[in-house]
Image (cartoon, rainbow over all chains, first blue to last red; front, side, top):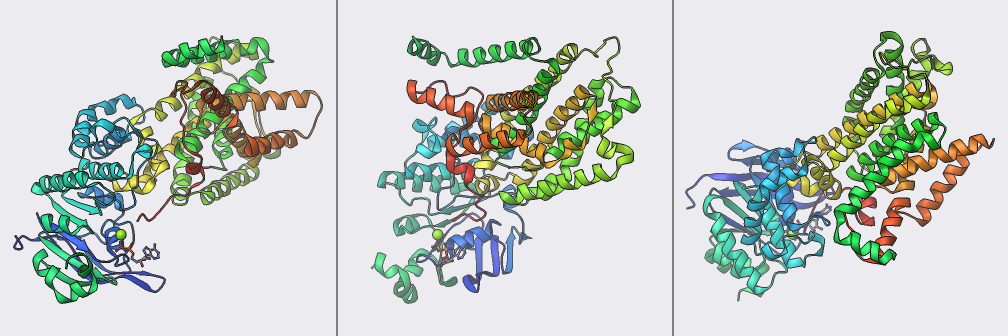
Length: 252
Length: 345
Ligand SMILES: Nc1ncnc2c1ncn2[C@@H]1O[C@H](COP(=O)(O)OP(=O)(O)O)[C@@H](O)[C@H]1O
Ligand SMILES: [Mg+2]
């Protein structure tokens, strides 16, 4: 598996906030078709790295490549259209919009109907059945007509996942997809990621080591914005540096 | 009794919508019978202007403080075309609106990069430039004297009677309102609302948010242009007042008074303000701005939802969830204030 080419990679990537290096010279190679986990203590720079990869933050230095093509400095919508979809750690939804309409909006983004200002929004009903399918996959079918703002936290996370999946991305970036979920929902999410990974690449920030262990092919451990260790889960978890820095508490 | 009616209506939300529409149309057709016809036509023009403005403020969340640029540019362009070409006034107004839309593209392009108060500042600055040009270029615009003698041309119809002209102008305004309604309830409109509520998420879905903002800005300018052109034809005259900042302010007042993000509210706000100004002027009261400004402050302080928004809110609170969709968009208070969140976590 580690033989497949890198689909998403960074070279000496740096992000500086007023002199503070949140991401400090990261070389990341995400191989096509793998599930790649990013772990590390809070403040390690994982979310910042996601924001760099998706164009939400400009890099202070370094390059980002997608499928061999340089995407450094591209705006987020452009990167999304190149096939990189993300979920947000802090749920980021349209509070008044129903769960189903959220997914329709995402499906419409790839279908290009959004420019039609002269047509009725009833046109968007063509996406409804696919939207319901996706909601069903993430366990939200029963809540399709509820507004996102009224959903409990775990369901908001699931909706985040459905939105990212609706874009049918080549690369799926998930920032703590199971945070705040009950056990049952965690299992469903793990199973779902296990299924959707079949034809795509997944990069996920995850604190739950059971989830990392059961899904990830490669684990990168970040600390203070630097890569501390990288490799298959069982190697990384026994790496003394890692045990000392972070995993020790969770995985004894 | 009221409760009975309301529960009936609740069971049939479509009735509310059609009922309101019928009442609105009836009022629109009857207006020049109850008012001095030129004032009735003014109400039409300002109502369309306010709705066009609210398309931007209420629906896209962009506060323009320079919409006089579009109203006024179209007033002059419409006037010049009507004077020099002899085209039917419909064509002149349409050309005026196109001129306003063309002007909106570069302004929108530079403006939407900024949000909140910066967007208001950029639009105000451009509107002041338009004012400056109109003032300086007096050979074309008549400068301080204004552009005089704009004809109401329509082959085969004598429109010199303002009562008749009202009915000639009404279809333009109704089409404009229909267009605004269509934009709000289109796939595009859904994206615009999404961009307003959460630009970062919209971008993550692949929507180029700035482009959407420029397009909705341009549509708003076009509809404002329709209104401004019609206004100039109604008065046979386009003056510097049309591009002055007080005109930008007046449309803000109307929209806020009626209720931001409510189509009906903008119509009511426009009607109230035009009627009030006319009444004050007739009564010989000079400080019209003082009164409208005072009303504006009261509304902002006490009734943040505006007349229409407050009325529907109270009805809903009193009688439960009265039909949600009467053509308006609801959003929580905080969304109106919140600046865009450029970097998510
Ligand atoms: N926009 C910002 N401005 C300043 N500092 C930031 C910003 N975003 C993140 N940081 C800082 O960068 C560090 C890494 O944050 P983050 O990437 O969110 O960590 P993680 O996701 O690994 O918990 C933290 O110390 C955080 O305070
Ligand atoms: Mg984080």
